[in-house]
Amino acid sequence: MAVKQLRLETANVSGKLSNLSDVLGRHGVNIRAISVGQESAETSSICIVVDDPRKARNALSSEKIEFQEISVLAVEMPDHPGGMNAVLRPLRDAKINVITMYPFIGRASNPVMILEVDNTAVATDVLKRNWVKLWDKEVYRL
Image 1 (tube, rainbow, N blue to C red):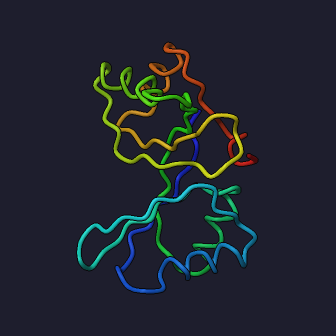
Image 2 (cartoon, rainbow, N blue to C red):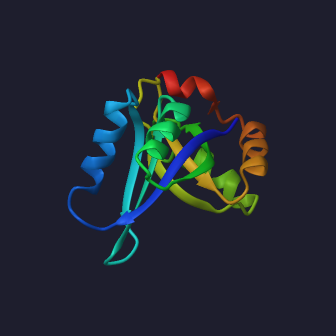
Image 3 (cartoon, rainbow, N blue to C red):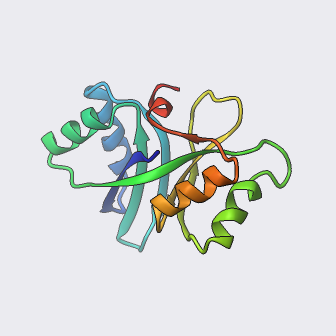
């Protein structure tokens, strides 16, 4: 049930994020989830989930923009105080490390979070056994 995330390591300078948005927009790709973080004074990391990973890969490759494709989970979070722990506690108990977590900008009834974990297969099994809703490719159409 993995969703594809594209991770870009880029120079930490003004305009890089705008350039990424421009490239994807020109190729008809919509960003559905994004996380931007400063790795060092010189480097930033951008993680995105898009509506069409194939088109995004082609767009980035055609512009000579380097990226990694990583399998991540799109997890529906219960929308109440402490609801996030319905997802995080089973992962903790299974000793699964959450590497990156950021919100999906979609229209699901409950919040959807993107989780990059250190073991996607085990995390998927653990979450399913704990009745956590996982989104698959349909997340690209939300």
